[in-house]
Length: 166
Image (cartoon, rainbow, N blue to C red; front, side, top):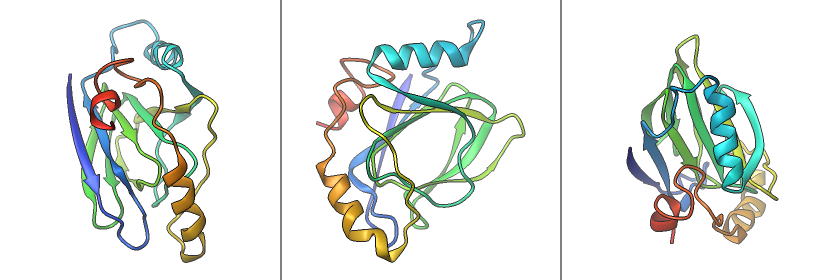
């Protein structure tokens, strides 16, 4: 597994975050009978929950009230991260993405079989924000007040956010 980090500046529409987005390449065990269930169980053991399974929205959005983990267990997608001035990256089966609150994400195109699991630190709920001017003051306050989760959903009590977000 390799962890690659990306920092995105506020682009005036998408606030992004001082914390880096983390991509865990080839981090997920897909060789089990039901990889999605296995991933959810692993993440749950590390304090993450409120899981959903589907895709990534095909428009700019972000969350200001929670960090988010996205775990690709099938297919691939080209995802624009960090807003219009961000990075277009390909997420593949086996990859996980830890998205700090405020960091934009946008599915620009995917394989027909693309599937991800999304999850959030237990005790936190997500909101949907789109980079509209009227949301700005409240979301900046929300983002700055969020704590760093106690455990990384992929690596647990060491590595990942425990090293790169502290």
